[in-house]
Image 1 (tube, rainbow, N blue to C red):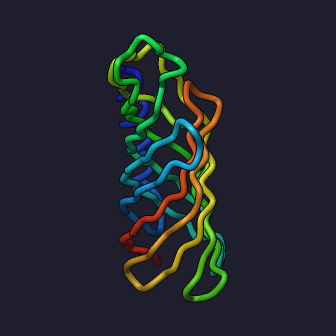
Image 2: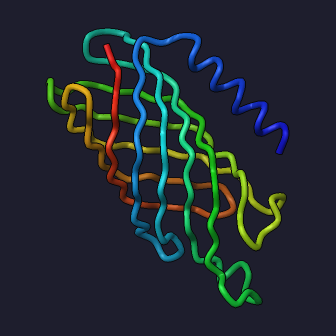
Length: 168
């Protein structure tokens, strides 16, 4: 756990050291596969302008995912698990117009805690988050799928969120 905190702190310090814009927001995801129930999260992004339409940067997201783990833990009376993760990754933003942009976040999701399960039994996962953004001047509405795979639990959801920004 200590190594995870050091890694996250290092990532945040490097994130704040450079960059030309930032955004932060909240999102809710409704699970769309058998074991995925829902997720809620907060995110922070820092961007670097490559040209007028393309931005690359770093993203960090803290989220809670609720999954049904009855297949993995049949002895538990309530197999619903609340898993807390931190996502660290790369963020890309491409403006289609002044109002719309497409986004793609990719990276690794680090497990922080889970109820009824040892922290050693929970593995991290890769994530891909493609989504569309309706971009107003200082606020945006985002929607798209969040795909987590390769960890203890695969998790798939359709997310809707709001993002506040200080870009450009």
